[in-house]
Image (cartoon, rainbow, N blue to C red; front, side):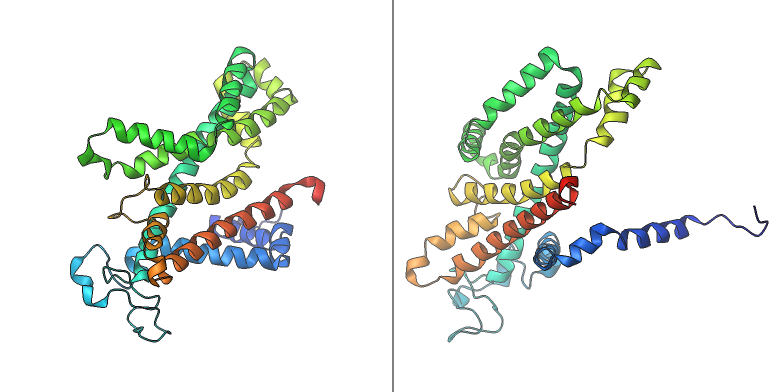
Length: 317
């Protein structure tokens, strides 16, 4: 070995890994799919604008001094009667629709991200336990998952929301609205993760590295979460991306039906529900723009999920 050789620093190694990633087949196939690039850019724009709505929104909608009833029912700025202050128009209370949408997007994204994370964690844990232990544990978990899958998602979410609201006092229902929705979506979303991880765990548990760990005295928990789990997580990114779009749609549906977020904490579904009441009076913009945002956001996540599934599938390479 040359005496002048110097071990690369951590920063240099990071730059090398980044360069290898940017030159990988994954990135090449990403740039080759134009619709995926558009979906990714649009999803990032909505994520940044929604999650940082306190900075991106033109007006603070929770501050009563920031809106005036004299500005109510204004059409979008490019239409006759519109004002440049309200790019997408205003609602019946004189609030800027663009600001309302950004704050509503914030709530919808937070509910979706938390729900998907909890579903992922719960489903992954139950899937690994079911696939590795087998026997009675596998039977109980999978039959419970099958029973949950037989119940329509919206119906079960409505049931959970109704029961929770019935048990809570009225003065705390608005405050607990978000946790109730998160719980509803989590309980209806963990099954796909569990079934997928279980199937992969069954394949992995008979491989040589698992058998070697057993022979060396490794405990079951150590084998499951130290050896098997890291090797079965590749499909999770696909499931989570697809599930995020579905979770946001589920929250919007519950809010549209009146059992989701309250009017003082508007999500996209709440805005669509409120705007629908004034649709026939000519205020179409209050419904159209939140609905378009919801549809394009969900569509972007579905496109990204489908692309990830194709890229990560070795049979399609």
